[in-house]
Length: 413
Image (cartoon, rainbow, N blue to C red; front, side, top):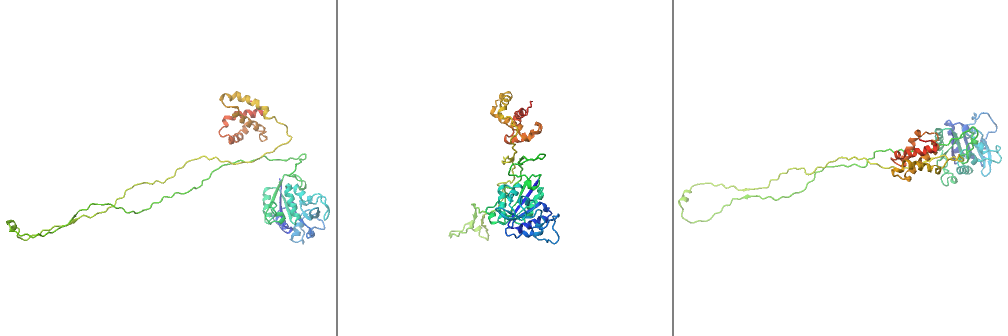
């Protein structure tokens, strides 16, 4: 498959530098094109006055823009109606100068026609053409692989191409980077390449391949940290108050005047003596004991949950016009109902319950992807697609789906 990488620059000098970078990177000159406005004929001196069998730059031509661009094939100047004089070189020049003599003439091809032939949409081709008309330079390179297309894009983007999709970019000749890769499946030279925006013609012995593309969804999972719980311990103080009953003993001495005769007992105590009396009192004594009053346990609980992930997938189908007419659903519905009545009506399930299964089998049998498939080869795909819309019901409806498949394919159990 050949792809064309296209970039529009503000002026010829920038475009020529981009061309030189492509050549320096090893891209073949014969695959590189440049088209630039030459209204004041400032670039006419680049056009060679003599022909040569060698496309390489000759000694003495220098390393300037003339040497690089002059080494491209098909270099010439043409007068294009509505645009004016343009300098064109490379494969694109053949389309630009179709029907034009070198230096002067009336073009029957033109820039837009050449770009459309490369597979560029007509609207984009008109924008590129307008860019050249306003003084820009168009650079294209043909490559035959995605790897080389990526390399070419990277090189062309270094020189700040114009973003044709940005509003007003062409009017202002913006410097927003934009490189376009147009892909065309061509087996002919570039000037007769397949037009992607018009009906394609296949010559005898040739083939055109169209891919049916379908997206699949793969759902995985990753661990995400939600938050962290930290448990701290700290010591606090608080005042407490408690009443206690205390006992005090205090010595008292009382003297009382007495005037009476001394008795014998009094006389017997008439000697020296000492009496001691001790005072006592109670004071509070504080002691503390520690008790465990609560336990805090820190741990983690794990649980599994099921979450439904919904996504949209795309599919590119290929529609074939004029293909042989296939038998429609209505032609088979009676047979499908008979199979339902014979096998499933007694279960209490209605026809409306089983009708989607028969329709699915009918669609599978008419699906071009499975045209050459046996049931065993196709069943895994059929089950996966059915379960996507009817979870956990394949075993229940599989036989009805198989019956529809066999009916349409002309088979029987």
